[in-house]
Image (cartoon, rainbow, N blue to C red; front, side, top):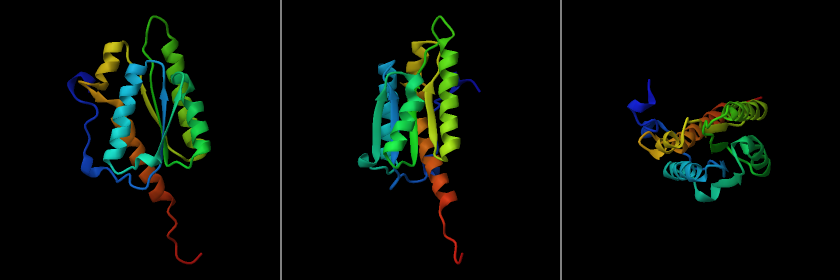
Length: 170
């Protein structure tokens, strides 16, 4: 389905678990700050809207999207978090640098998630141009930061559900 046809951030709020009592990390790339800060606002506001407390949200900035996995690992090592959300924007441009960066970030966050058993959320825009990025950072196609926040809430709830030890006996 083409993204031009809908708001990609629409979701069923009633199906989202409460974020009350959950702790989140948000790692934001400074590169393309106009876009990444809009993603951050959408993410942060969505976490609060669904019950997270401001005191349970820890935010750090890193220079660019390439540094998101390292920043996420450092933050996760410093705080006890239920999920870490990584927000960035890599605009295609004239060279293929975007392919290398996007692949490295996706692989890095996947590896962190698998190795740690903790959700590390990929909230990185990968547009062809700045207009497409703005459309996805609070514009006509919604806000990828909102999507990243709802994904983090769902994954944190899933982790909690699957790791709760309510056994009787052994």
